[in-house]
Image: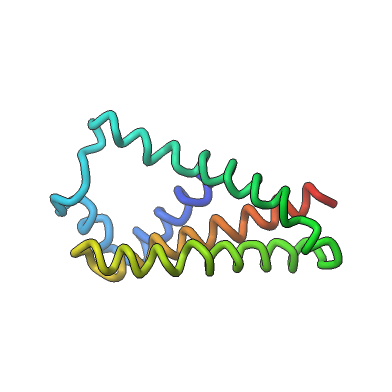
Length: 124
């Protein structure tokens, strides 16, 4: 998850050159020197553990599907359950550019898909 997020951050900074400036010019975020920013790096680990736990309870649903489709369905279900509500909460709660929040939701969807494919591959 950390690697996926880091790669997506590099891609977003190339595709949307202004996004890096958005992050650095906002007073909304803590500085990277703040010890609480460690949570930013712990989040993918916690997410991965949580998704593995959910997979262990739902993997029977995906047994008949190929690895690709099982991972896709798991990732999509995760995105619908978590990603869409988080998008609306962020849009409604923060005065941030919609593009920035959109990249967060995109990362969440990518994390769900990658996790689904990894879990489906290990389950076979």
